[in-house]
Amino acid sequence: MTWWQVLDTYVSIWGGVGGFVASEIKRRESKLLPPTTRIMLSFWEQLSEYVWNIILGVLLVHLYSATGSTLNILTATITGGSAPLILRSLFNATPHRLPGKTEPD
Picture 1: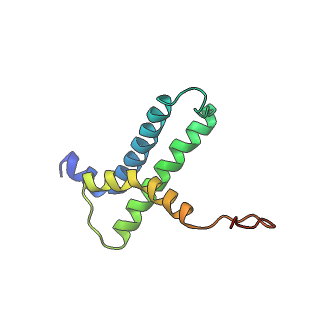
Picture 2: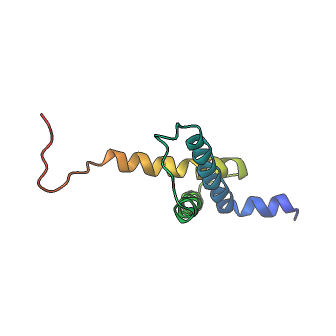
């Protein structure tokens, strides 16, 4: 068995790579914002964002693999990179109502 065949069997790891890449793209895009609108995160906040996105990427690819889907390295990396976006869109789809607040008419 060659090294790329071994890596292909551990596709969940490539989901983590995709999650890392998604975090890095987001960090680089935030550097392009004007300093007045840029959110300055501490080292620990940045690290937790990287770790969280890597875990989300691994988890999503693992769920695909566990349900019988066959993913190669490329599709696993793309799926892992899209995991934070999928989760963000799910959170935006649910209403966030604070107690005692009414929606404007």
